[in-house]
Length: 382
Image (cartoon, rainbow, N blue to C red; front, side, top):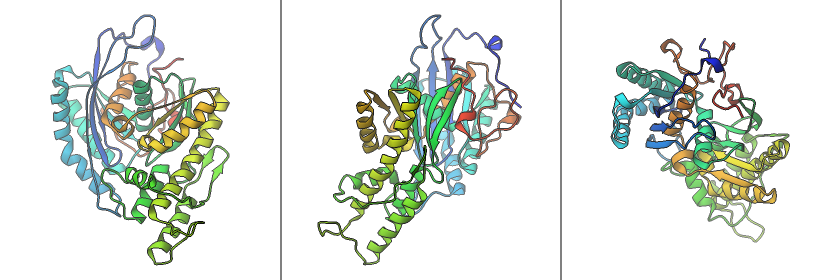
């Protein structure tokens, strides 16, 4: 079992530190390099410097998802090139790197393993310490760094996760989440039903089609307390789409035929309204006026706009990033890993096995889980 250092054991780092980060939990392979500057005796830590943020995506034909085996092969094929490109972009050499950070989980098993092997190899070749990073925490910390959000309620929405989160006592506490599939997975699977291209991403292409939609198709609205459910919505709208494709059109109230653009519009409006509802409840509970949207679905402008309307009614504000940082990337792993590294955390080689269920090891806790709220956020004490 790895242990986090106590306050008395924290290393005194009074110089800039640099981390290489590798992300590969799904179909995005990312390599990032980031520099942190020493914290002043009084005041916040200076902003981090992003030195490189390189990404390559495994894209499948329309109507198909990405299989773990094929995705892992993609990562193995491109990881060396991306690391070299990142070093070239940053102008650094391996001697300038303090630690090698990698996504240890959660995520898809085979792609995670490919990146973990690359990280271990680089760590041994360069003689640099290894730092395993929780993917979910990487998203949150990168969002906080880029936007400057102080202590927001976090809506984490991606292909594999849907959670409403707030920080308390060195944990990111989960207030609500999906009961079945993630919002990004719901959108991706509907894109397959419609045979929508996966380039650059199915969710983005659904967003473009939704902008052309004119008629709202009523769908199940499944908020259960602070949680949401997507599977019933997907099954229902898949049925509507299959009727249309089978020559049995559905009609709007004005007599016009329902189109795939209308279905994309209706799906977005419904599931985004559900997310806004549970996020607003979390804001009311913790007394926050900030919402930070992270994860790949966080790029969706309609989601940001709907959340902004709610936040303004509460005299609050929405914080979000663009696709460079919302979509899975290496820089978020470098950043979160370097935050942990600066507290004295290291991942021993024998403990570096990736898992689909993972959290940074917690003191006196032997088993690792994938829950965001089980990660000890040792670098925050506010």
